[in-house]
Structure formats: structure tokens, C-alpha cells
Amino acid sequence: MTQKVKLPSPFKLVTYDTIRSTNEEAKRLAINGMEGDIIVWAKKQTLGVGRRGRKWVSQKGNLYFSILLRPDCSVSKAMQLGFVVSLSIAQVLDDVLPKIAKVNCKWPNDILVGNRKISGILLESRLTPLGEIDWLIIGVGLNVKNFPKDVEFPATSLIEEGAKKTISAEIILKLFSHHFLLTYEKWDKLGFETIRKTWLSRVAWLGEEITVQLEYETLKGEFKNLDKDGALIILHNGVDRRITAGDIFI
Ligand code: BTN
Image (cartoon, rainbow, N blue to C red):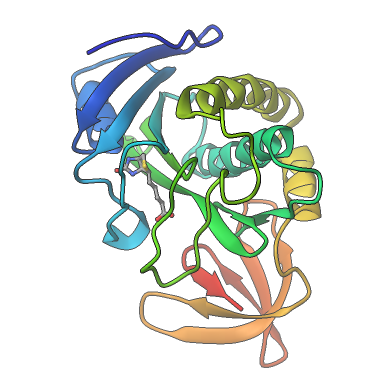
């Protein structure tokens, strides 16, 4: 274990060269009683996982980290933190990409540049027997130098999108923790509404016809809104449908 990057307080950083999965390690720390506000960062993962059990290709050069939080709030409120993180990533991309880059949030938590995926987020949580949140892990993968070519949804990286050649996972992690702290504080003080509005102002495909892949069905409809809890609202066969989990495509 090494520690080079210094993050703003209150985050404590745990760094690995190679690990199976930073989410898995954050989970191990949580189960062993570690306090929150930890970021587990690895230069490479050998068993990176994506949403819905997919594999997250994790070669050296990109950013892989997981934030361990113990938020003192309801489960539905804690889930809003996925939007806080995706917005913070979009803000980092604004800092490091040329002004012409089209950076969008994609429901629920992906980040796109010019309709290609650059970052994905995996949320995992455990509840106490009373149904309160025990821990929440938010895992982030962000393509800095390379990106997978043989994937269902087209991908890209910061270098591909015109970031300076000197960009690195370290720089992005520092920028992220700065933006995340500010956005988290805003969420904590002002609530989700302000985050929801900013996220919606930069979301992909609002008002367009989208395909939503659910576990057991696929729906088509107009992307109408994000509701007060972060659920997707689509107009399907003339009726509003509220979707809490799924993948969307155009
Ligand atoms: C997605 O499917 O879009 C989410 C991908 C999340 C990948 C990150 S990389 C760091 C953390 N560790 C993992 O094993 N997965 C997440």
C-alpha cells in the first residue's frame, strides 16, 4: 500500500497499485467497521465490476476509485449521492477538456462526452436491521488514457477527447475530490432539488425518444423528467412511467 496523492479533508485515501476491485476493498473495510469518508484508489483492477454484474475493464492509465460513506440519512436520500458524484465528474471534465467538448450526464449515473461513455458509477449499500443505511459505496471508473473498444455502448477517454497529454489519474482524483466536497456540501445544506436541476440542465436525451432496458422488459418512450428522488420519468403509450433502475439507450 502506498500513499502519494493528498486529498482535501475529511477524505482519507487508501491507495493500491493493483487490486481486484476498489468496491470490493471498500466493502471489506466497511464490514470491518472502518469509518466513512474513505477513498480507495487503485492504479489497476484485475476484477473491476460494472453495473448489472458487467465487467469493468481496468488497465493502467485510467482512474478507479470507491468512496466509502456512512451517511446519516434515509436510503432514498443516500441514493441521491450518485447524482452528486456524476455531477462532480462532469465538473472535472469541464476543467480538463476543450470548451467544445459536449459533456453530458446520462441517467442514472454515467458521463458521456459526445455521446460516448467516459465514466461509469456503481453504487452498493448495506442497510442495518432497522432499515437505515449502514454504509454506501460509490465506485467510479473514468477513462483517462485508454478506453475499451469492444463494448455495447461506444466509449472514449480524456486523451481521445483532447485533454492535455500530461493529464493523469492523480490529477483527476484531486480535482474530483475538490468538486465532490463542494457539491456534497450544497446537497447537504440545500437538498437534492438544486442538484437535480443542475444535473437535468446537462443531461443527455431529455425530450427525446429513448429505449429503457429493465430487468425483464424493454420500454420505449419520451424522456420527460427526473423526479424528486432521482427516478426517470418517461412517457410510454401516453402514460408517465417512473423507472428507478435500468439502462437507457437512444
Ligand atoms: C458501470 O457499469 O458503468 C459502472 C462502472 C463502475 C466501475 C468502477 S471502477 C472503480 C470501482 N471498482 C469496481 O470494481 N467498479 C467500480
